[in-house]
Length: 532
Image 1 (cartoon, rainbow, N blue to C red):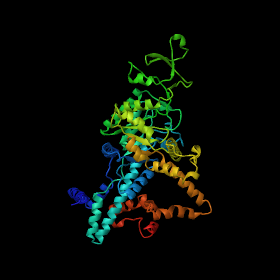
Image 2: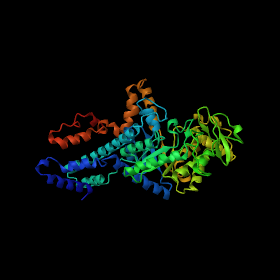
Image 3: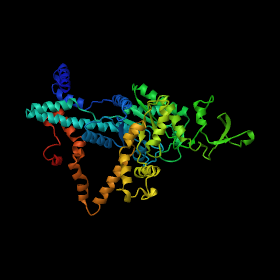
């Protein structure tokens, strides 16, 4: 007996036990509804997906080719369509996640309108989007299973036992669209208590992995913009602890914390760290401060701050904003210290925000981290903020020049030009872009590769193309040729938009509830039949 049939049998017994009052309830219909709603709460999802991520982390430790990937989402429908596409093209969601970007929430989900990535949007929008994403992913499960149930009914009606057995096997081995979401909590939206409260809401919505950064919450900047300000390690560790306590309180003991450091591009700090003795974390943080060593009180002016660093009195450089400046060139050392400290104090994964996609640069830092924490692993932002074409063409140019190869045919500053697209250099750069994720996983400890803002850009590009054609000479052909015809020929499920929105699921329910009296939408006059 299949698992599906076992559920039906259990429900038949339950209905029978209730007596004649439940005679109208069909056990198989109830079983179908149960399977179409496997996850009853967000905590069910958080536990299920945390288990998946932990298994994937262990698999990566054993074999670096087993890295994971995700794409950023700003709407439940976008996340749903990604997972439908993944299952369609690859047959499995294994090692494929979703990323929830704070940048995209700020730009696209704030009630204040489009906002920069500075934690000015409503923090409640973060758990709301997690819940929305999982609502759409669960609906994708219901839709696909509904199709299998209809196939089963059709096979039974034709007395095709072989087909019925085949469909039953698909139902029993159904793979859910629900996958891990790595969710961005920015710098915690306040103090450690505020971080804890928001983390709880995110976990209750289904998040198994929370990414938090070491910037000052009320000075937070996008990771790829200037003016970033970091906090002393003690402040950041308090927030890591707050997230861990949130996981533990809610029973998700294997929840994942991603500790992000922005120190590579952050030249400022808002406060001087508290230090009790030479060589402690506070002292190490302060040792990176830029400033002048002084000999006596005569070197101190009104409002100056003086700290003991490296055994001497240091007057840190203080800007008009009241912020303190780090030494030029100290970013890599600060990143390494940040990462080691985070991993030794409760974080599970690292995120190093860089200014360019360069495997060698990332590997240099990770190798130093792994001298202390051998299994250190990264989540890496394959950011659209990088000009990937120009960066990699320049990397190839520089490598060839260092190797003594003639590069006189190329202008390094203009390598983005389409004039170079078919050249040997451009083809080599494209190949390096193609293998960047595998190379990074193998050489730089990158467990998870993500693109933060892909659908922000794909939406803009596709809309531009449609507007140009539809409002231009092509008219309606601009939509038909550029969108619908491609949907049909590429087998895009959304071409049947009524089905995608849940119309067929609703019809199934109407039949369950009302039997032959059900007024269904999927009859012969439904124009969606044109796409059968």
